[in-house]
Length: 114
Length: 116
Image (cartoon, rainbow over all chains, first blue to last red; front, side):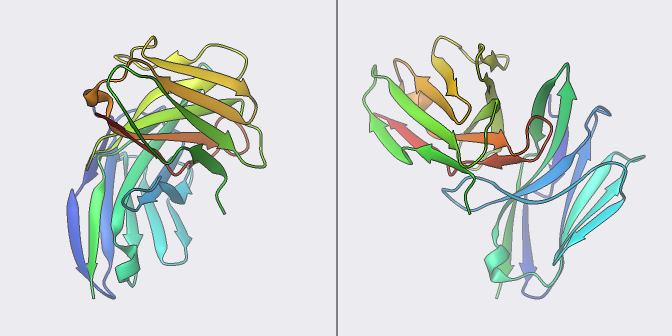
């Protein structure tokens, strides 16, 4: 059962453009939504994260928009650069009976053309 | 800088042998660590939660006798793949929450396991 659905699978954006990746979740017990960036052969790196009591969070060129009622959140990368080319994963965190669990989306392979 | 390290980064072993992968939290203590598995071009799948001082919690479908987890100290968790088979070849990644359970998880650099 896929609890976090991510789209698109792949995305090509021109340098300087805006990259947008979307995620939707089902479980209302999720309380924290991070985005990770992964380069080939490397572990995921935490990029930015948001909690459901906030509708938007911005850090530099990266912005998360969060819609609690629609159970959707998205990552916007402004002024996209070739160095942003990587795979991006959204995730959702829950703590049930003291046990933390992070569920990942399917991933989006982002390519920024110079 | 890195907050979670893994060793080795790459390992090749023969079928039937066992392989141990270490995960260390750097400069912080982690009572809980997590082990993930990632196949090429796929997402991360949680295998198990490693708990310091107690048994690991395995996700449904993960064989606990095949993937042995030991959380030896507050900064070290190990994953041992026993009697490895070619289908166990994968990218294994650990993570730890900086600040304790419920906080942001930071991931190690991963270990590429190839079973021949």
